[in-house]
Image (cartoon, rainbow over all chains, first blue to last red; front, top):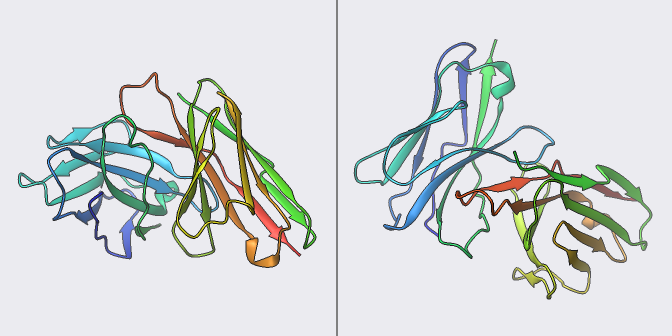
Length: 112
Length: 117
């Protein structure tokens, strides 16, 4: 699985959009970009994933650059409950390759 | 949505004793479950892949005789920390994939915090 690079920490004002970047310059053609988050002392929570098109769900939007070497997770209206560590993970989505390898992630703090 | 339950959520034990942690998929079957360990202020580290009806696959550096994994049914995997010592104190988290979903997404349990005195 390709390696990802994320800033170690970010702050965002409550109510504003939080934009979390991720670099994955060695991503291969069959690898997806997954985002999970971990709120303190809880298990990780799935947020969103994508291959090459931008994706949106009820939690967030995922913007993937055309060359797929980087992506941005967008939380449109951040709340205090969005304070967490956010992990960007690149993984081959083929059946049988289900395990996730976590990097160090970005610690997002939402400021009141 | 898929739910993974862990029990106990926290446990304190004396050094030298064994502790069992259960991971259950509540509303789906999982032929494979994953066990992670997380030390304070660190990321999750995959320990092993639990396979229903067969032996678990351990990551490099993880002692299989110390961390016993049993995946006896399609909804239950157990991790037993044998002869626990203070350095085994950690946050243990399991995960599984709901195969009914077309997406290759893992659902995680809430974690089990082990403290060895």
